[in-house]
Image (cartoon, rainbow, N blue to C red):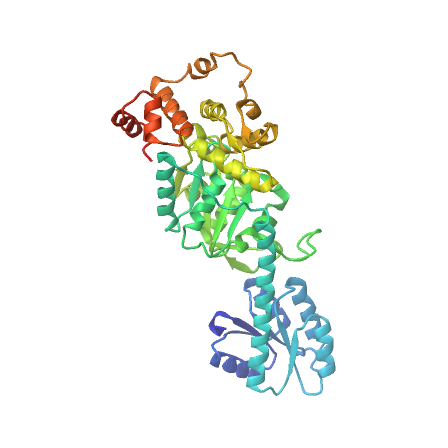
Amino acid sequence: MNNANHSILVADDDADVLSALKLALRTEQYQVTTASSPHEVITLLERKHFSCLLIDLNYTQDTTSGIEGMSLLKEIRQRDADVPIIVITGFGSVGIAVEAMKLGACDFIEKPWRNSQLFARIKQQVERANAIQVNKKLSHENALLREAQPLNVVAHSNVMSTLLTQIERVAQSDMNVLFTGENGTGKSMLAKYLHHHSTRSNNSFISVNMGAIPESLFESEMFGHVKGAFTDAKDDRIGRFELANQGTLFLDEIANINLAQQAKLLHVLEAHQFERVGSAVTLQADVRLVSATNAPLEDLVASGQFRQDLLYRLNTVEIRIPALRERIEDIPNLATHFIQQLCTKYGTAAKSLSDCATSALLQYTWPGNIRELAHTIERGMFLSNGDIIDESALNLPGGKSKPANQKLQTTEEKTLEEIEKQVILERQHKHDKDPIKTARSLGLTRSSYYRRLEKYQLNQ
């Protein structure tokens, strides 16, 4: 244990005792602060967090009963349920010390003390408090991790390969990142991908859906609260900023917070500090902030609904995630990925898509992007007969029930190049990307086929 990282508050009305304890503790590299009255103790606790308190039970108003010390102990415990408190008592006052422990003291030491005994008691209490705090944090993290999905980015198209390379480069810095793009494009997964490739990857990734936090609970969710801070605060709560300490905090749907919440968030980002609700103790905010939105933040700034200074804090780097219709090369692989996931989830036999089903997936415009594709595949899994998912099982809007000239109808809005690219993708899937069979089915020589792959950036 590195004592230099721990601060001790010593309270006694005897200046000689304060000097002796201060000197002794400093030889052990502790940071030491002294107080000579209960009022001074409370004032100091409002300004700073201490690793351990050494509190005398008797002060100038009453030198024998311990009443002042008991009252101080109660007030400290009302403010902080976890800080370790060691009471200092005179010889023959063990009974009072026992009463103090019933009120929340962790240990006691008698005057005159032996330094070795004092150091051992402090070390024991500091380590115990650290363990309690770590367990609390792990408990909160585990609750969040139970909701998390495993990281598995499927990206074979050139546009996505380029994007992932960009994210990997940005991840090496500590810059705040703003992901933009339509709903369902995978912004939250790519935020995890960024964290996984960052220097903070060994620490927590904490995700918050900003649109799901009630306004009245915003500060409690983000910064935490202490027991008794408000009516329903039955226990201390660790906020998301504290949970993400030295890691990454992901704020999804960032455009959904109001101006008052924006101001509170901006203050933390500027000062790198915050306080739990009901506490005046300042905590450090060492987090890498990643945000995401599908809303046009610049338009919201222009209309006065979003703070421009907050936007500048969030978008040190802005990364736009392409819609699924902009990366259609990935659709067959994503579909196969979802089928495998669902077969594992439901314990069903392996399934695959028919050629017509694949063609339908490639022709559809996917307004709901990857999320809609995942739901479509899941629907197809249960509406299909046997181990083949056909087009009718997908039940795509405007699908299957159309006449035989359906392909002409669905492609009438596309350019000739877009149609050619789509046909190449369909044939690649049909022939498992075998270049000879694919080229032959298209009536192309191999060199013509490869020129088209290069033209449409399909050569991966």
